[in-house]
Length: 179
Length: 308
Image 1 (cartoon, rainbow over the protein chains, first blue to last red):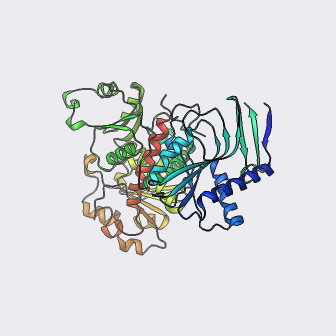
Image 2 (image 1 turned 90 degrees about the horizontal axis):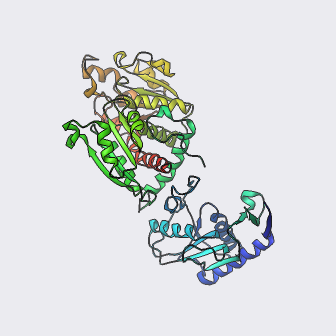
Image 3 (image 1 turned 30 degrees about the vertical axis):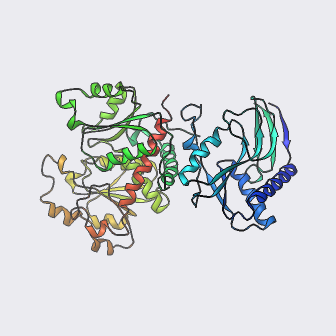
């Protein structure tokens, strides 16, 4: 199994700042916008972005939700491993809000499809955008594209993008691995 | 992640501690789901479940049906009263006929102990035991423990007394298995005639003095007298039973500490428990009912994920 570094800690930091600025450009004071991290790994991106927006750009009152999509996935009983649910933390309704879904890697698009269904349980948003740190090109199963992307990569199906975070794995780094 | 060690839920006896923890963790997520404004998830849209009830039930049947519908399963209901069982059809034939209509899971209540186990050996479907005679009622025991965990933080190390008709109660047996598996201390309390011989062999204590039992426990689970199963007279009068084994406000107020009161329902108000206790803040009876839906969603979800 070989792996190469796709993004270093410094590059991740620069990209997160750029994404934060792009969000700021479109949503300004975030008065009618909610950020939603998709569990389990999109939440790290969402929490980092929220921190940057609050601490470095002085945005107050950002609403951040964490959404578990396990029960909305389309591969129940189809995979080798059982699906493991994680916590959903949504303390608000998304009725008439602008929602930004946030995930780490966009691959087939099926997780996002599940998230689009799941979000309906919390109301009818006025619009939904998608932010993803890594966009794997040419691998979509569904017509889903991100509005904000960190880095686009061409990875073949045998390869896996592994995103590691300081909070969980000890350091920020993204690898491209051969399975 | 882990999955259940069993393909059917026939009784707590067949589960291990990890299974119970997995069911509880899954139920935590479903409890959050059923408190949303839209309480439904699409997970089981390709699963069909038959609820087969050969014995009366209100709470359990509604709770299972609601759990199945919240998971988007297709549901068919069958009550023995209006069926061909009365014309002499056997249990296996009845169930196989239902399964021919492409049913994946059977939730069954039956008056005979072991009916679920028997069925699981003879038909191709996941079986959930919703009560088999005086044997087991696993989902009730799971929701009881889940409610204790919710109220007191943990089940391990807690003192739980089960009061009433232990002899005829499937809730008692399943609760004993579940509580012991999680490391709780269990005592049973009731008239000697309604406590099975050799119950100590399950690792539970016996107490015939209600006041002593209540002073010992953190949680009291009050059971109903199963009048429909009393073939002979086990105690002189209901009034005498109430005087010795009924819980009232006065009794609770005179204890050293505040204990939690549970009841699996249906309540016979004024017999095993008075109204002021049933409706007091110490009582978690209605929480048990709410948790019942979440627990049954978890059990059905986890069993369904093993259907190939």
